[in-house]
Image (cartoon, rainbow, N blue to C red; front, side, top):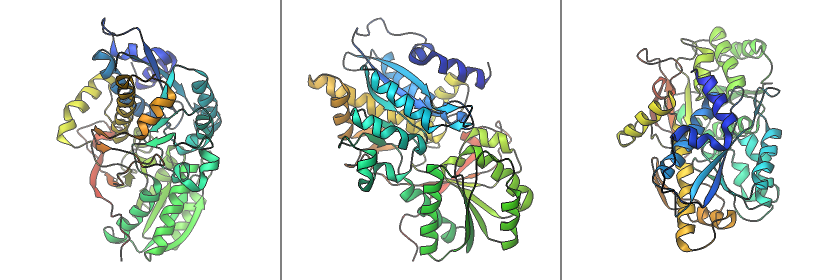
Length: 416
C-alpha cells in the first residue's frame, strides 16, 4: 500500500484509527472511555509531515491502550483533517470547523495538534470558550500564547494551548545567531509564504538579524499558490547576498528551493521547521535540496540511542521513518495520557476541565526530556536544534530521519 493510500484510509477511519493500527484492544480494558482528538493537515502540501506527526500521537495512545488503558479508561481517537484541496495545504477555516466538531463531542477531553500556527490561531478562541486543551507538537508562532494577545486567543481566561516545542521567538532569532556566528553570513535576503507561521518566523529572524549586525537586504512575501518565483529570485541574485532565509511551509517552500537552486545554487539557504518534510525532499529532489539548513524547535531526540528501539518500532508499524516532530507528537500524547491518569487516580471526574488543569501542572519525562509548561502553556525548554540536508544514498530520498543531519544547537543568547 502506498503512503498516500494509507493516509487516506487512516483519515477516513477517524475514530477507529487506534483500533486499526493497534490491531486489538486488550480484553481487560475497562468499559469507561474518553476521546483524544488529533487535528492535522493530512491533505495537501503538508500531508507528509502531518502523517508522521499523527502516527507519533497514535503510537502513544496505542501503547497506553495495549497496557489496559489509563486509570480505568480506554482511550478513543478522533482524527480530523484540516487540509483542503482548495487551499492546497492547511486551511484555517477548516481548522476552525474541526475545533467546533471537537468541542461539540463531550467525550473529547483534550487534543493533540494542530501542526500549523495558522490552524492554531483559528482554533484557539473556539477551544478556549469550551476550556478544551490542545497540545501541539509543532506549532511555533508565539502570538498564540503571548499574554498580550490573551483577549484574542484565550478569551476563556485559562491557558488551553500547550506546546511540546518552543516558539519562533527563539527559533527565528537563534537561527540568525547561528548564521552569523557559525556560517559567517554577513548579508541575507528574507522570504516568507504569507502564512501566520511564515510571517512570524521571518519577522522574528529579521529583527534579530538586524540587532546583531547582519545586512538584511530585503524581505519579500510570496503567494504560496503562485508557480513561478523566478522574478523575485533573479532580483535577489543581483544583490548578491550571502544567504537566503525562508519562513514558511512546503507549498511555497518546494518552489523556493527548486528555483533558487536553478538561479543561485551556491548561496547559503536556510529556513525553519517548515522546511523539514518528506514531501519537500521528494518535491525538490537532489541535488537541488542538498545543503539547506533548517531549525527545529526541540532538542535532537531522533539520534538519541535511547530512542532507537522506538524509532525502529515506528518504522515497522507505519512503513515510514519518524521525524523529530513525530517524537514531539508522541510526547504530546504522553502529556495528555499522563494528565488523564493523574485525574482518574485522584478520584475526580475525567473531563476537559480537570484534564486541562492537569496538563497545566505536567512534569512528564518524555523522549525529548522533561516536559513542563509555564503559565501561558509554553514548554519551559527553549532548545533550538539545527539540521542540514545531506544526501544519504543508503536511504530513500524522502526519508526525513536520514536525509536531515543534526548539526548542533543554535545559540540563544544574542551574539555580542
